[in-house]
Length: 488
Image (cartoon, rainbow, N blue to C red; front, side, top):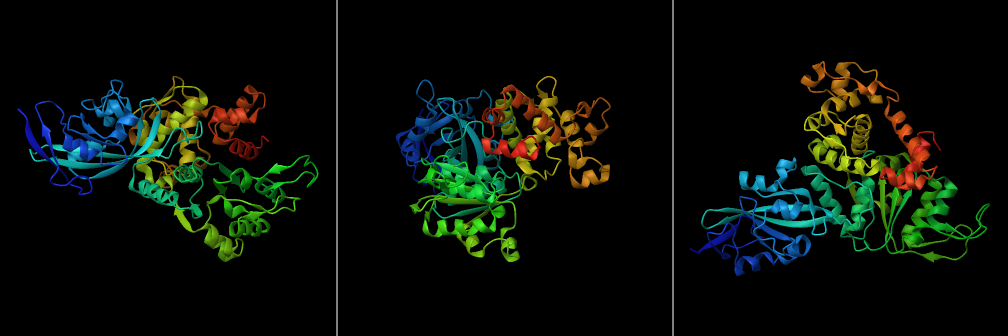
């Protein structure tokens, strides 16, 4: 027999104490009042009961996650939102459902949802407890899209994580995306500054315009000016035609200046003029050109210290650092290692066209290391483990051996290694069944990476663009790797 149930959100922004809906003996709840409440949200919004069953959804949710029969209500949330046959926590992911029904407290987490077209979306889920007057507890989820698959470059990793440190950083990036002010991203090498810059661009009003990258570390003084501003025909020896610079190519979009702290002082003044006036001239040209671009800069240095030391212009610093965002190191968010590892192994599988998988005992090992190379080093650890796996399985023993053979661990005694980098769990360390497959040559990260890149170069007849695509990185990055590994 039907009876009225008052739905009360413990967070006032979602529903007032006057909201009511009709409940029946059916396992889910629906009503005109409830549907009106969920439709008041612009973002996808879903209400879920204790048994993971969807109670109500708004139009935005139906549009993105529409089930094959056209009705998500009554289905399990993990089937509709994730395309899984089991709840998220059984797949090893943080589950807001568990948190809400265990604690009754609001929570925020990052998730990957799958839409009706089987495409993955990285989303930010704000989950709230909803209390019915009959004493039943429900969960309301407001879903904000973080990364659209249509805007992500093929093969690139995603920004993922659930820790408060990471989510606070994502919130700052979101605020920056809503502005047109220059942004300075500061963080250690390997923390994902390029992904952060791309995140800002994708979520800005310029998202439908180009995103151009300038790497200050690989461009010489003269080459920087030609690449950034372009050149006219005959501007210098070898310039057989005119060339558009990155500022022209990014018109209306975003220019990302990576490692801005390495920019030569002679070029700092020229960059400052462009930022102040929006005008520049091609190399060898006399015509003044205008550009409308948004500037995002990144550095792994303490740039203000460079200003004080006189190696970086103070006026340029104030011009590029209107919004200053620090990206946390991986050791500050070690609880994200498990989520990152899953995402990275997916990227490695795409790059190597394989199907490696991580066993449950891997994550304890991965979290026992402090990662001086941050997320980039975590990816390399998994890459090394994958190349030494005999059965497409990456287990804890294999990870132990990878860490023992990292260059920075060589020559350290056990006490120093435990204090500085990595101390494997005792059970694994004392096991006599561990065989050291990593002892074979090449044994160092640099040797292994060089060997793999050489194989790819041979496979693709020296085509560096195809090698970059196979590795899931940009062509710019492969050039830098070849130079670093003495392969160029």
